[in-house]
Image (cartoon, rainbow, N blue to C red; front, side, top):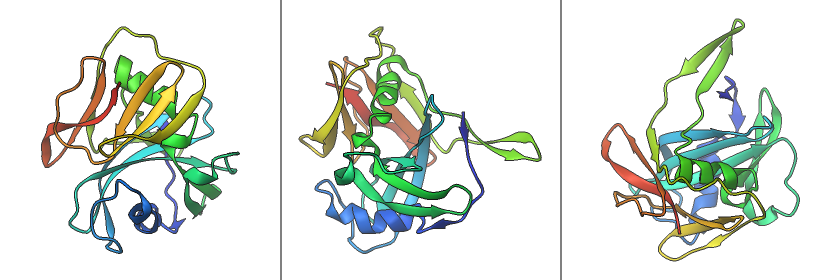
Length: 207
């Protein structure tokens, strides 16, 4: 489960992305236009240290873009090239936001969602000592391949056709940056849908 906080963020996540997205080679949309949220899903860090959220956004009237992010309380060593920016969180303090594809915590969780249909984390707030669950904004469907979820070294790099390739152990995963409806490959994939997008789009797949 993912614990959320009712907090003020400076800059907001969408403001941060408005400055970062146009510099990506897979960006599509209007540079400088406001970035709007379409939907989102989260994974849960087993250690409870890193926030892991994937935002589906648009820049102006552009297509939907997929942006996995991780939020950390201290900088991630050796990951300056994946840094999206720094956020001041009114509850948690300073948070370093990274492109999750370059964060070693993200890759095994993505692999579990793609290969074993591990799903998304349930999101909740603590209200007067009780859990208040927030409804999900989209649905996820992964494959049940029977393959073990990999462990081992993690790396990331650009791929062809607007994907980012994430490698964990001996498994190579493609994160689709501009997701559209597509067939899920036999090797395994992760699809998602949200209100207004009834036909599932392909979010990630094993290669």
